[in-house]
Length: 221
Image (cartoon, rainbow, N blue to C red; front, side, top):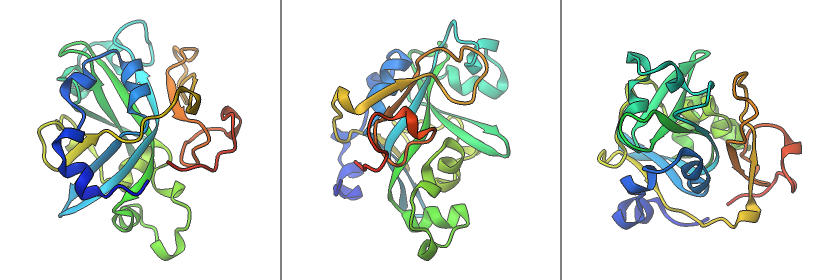
């Protein structure tokens, strides 16, 4: 995909609206695939195309952080649709986009990006030498690496990318249903049977097992 970041993010018409996120998390998780997710750091945009997501529900989902009710640590998950909910895990972080209405408590975890913009800056954030980093999977494959590459931590929790000019979620290539695979979520022990993980089948930047793909995992958007 050769679309330039300036045109994509600079065009307000391409940005996902509040209404886009004000829907069931499984719907948003599926439709986020192929969308752009980026932030601007010291004038440099970093980010890429979303290729893997997981939905977390507001009810009947023991793996969702909202299952224990609203607490200081997860309050952003109950905020306006599109709000960033960022939480720490194993000395790293995970970033979610809140879905449905205020007070609901559902969100979509961004598990992987296909890196496109600011790759040199992302390498710096990850402590990698760009001249030696030939595989972009080391940058944004998996939620922890993704957050490191985009310098996302708890200070980003509660950010509204609809209003903040240094963040953007925007429309990208429309994916046919044949390119999307649905599986149970990864790395959870509760509600593990729910089919709430969505990814671009065959995309090389998707995390998890190769056998989950129907086609060879070597494609790019």
